[in-house]
Image (tube, rainbow, N blue to C red; front, top):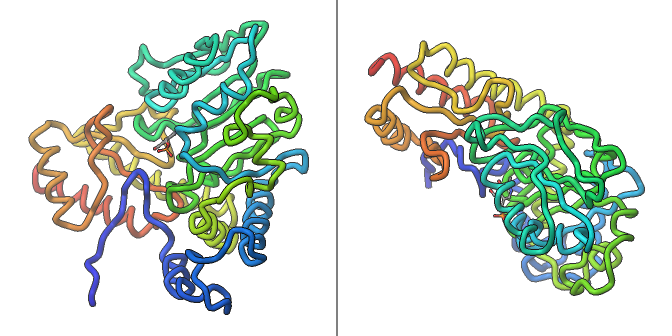
Length: 363
Ligand code: PLP
């Protein structure tokens, strides 16, 4: 059956590399000669243990994760991390400091407030989250338990270029929408978490990278399933893991490795984002970016068309031409092209060409 050409710009779950999808299809009924599907194997089998260990190892290699860190595969999405972080690390007498950069940091803050004292160390709310908050002016309480930030705000389309060093205070980052899109110095962070469904694989697994020293501070009264140390000590096999999702993360990580690693991803992502943003910037105001130029995300390009009527028409025509997922999130409205690692330059070129043609016809 011929499949229609689709350009997937969804924000997540997002498109996966074509090669990976083909491999999954080939191996689905018989994983490495076992005669069993990866959907059917036991998480206690040697085949799955190998996938689990290898996937952790691949992440360590790709992100140059120091040996003093644990890599965990968890469930419940990044939203569960919003609750687990304060549950594990916001102890009495301490304050959790949050950088408020948009919808996702807002959800993390709301969960922390249920658990203890919180402070907003920096915020761009006054600018309607069109830029990332300046970390240089960050004000920290002397009893700060940790600082939490969102490296890429998926909805606003903003992203940090650099991260401040909070010194002795543990820095915790939600990297759900830009993990593995560029090199980061993991040693600057005490804990990083990321839902898989953008750059890592399908939804259902969340990757957590945590400094062992931080894990040693977790109080004993945290329920086991919510306790990072329990997951780390049981090598992410405390309970039944999402085996299929981890298997797919394994394949995606190999695909990243074969395509130049995170540096290769960064090069590709920069070219893709430059193409879309320059199309916006050269449109003479027909298109306009929603984020400040120095905060623009390489993963989620948010923009608008000069009036609402034309914007609606743009969306309708885009859909008819096979471009899916361009409608902005309801919090930000307008348009958003999510251009995660698996989106190709050619797909971005097709969108840029469509934008130029649409402007030629209606501008
Ligand atoms: N954090 C960020 C930056 C996100 O983009 C998302 C989802 O898009 C989440 C957290 C929530 O992730 P989940 O749906 O896996 O809970």
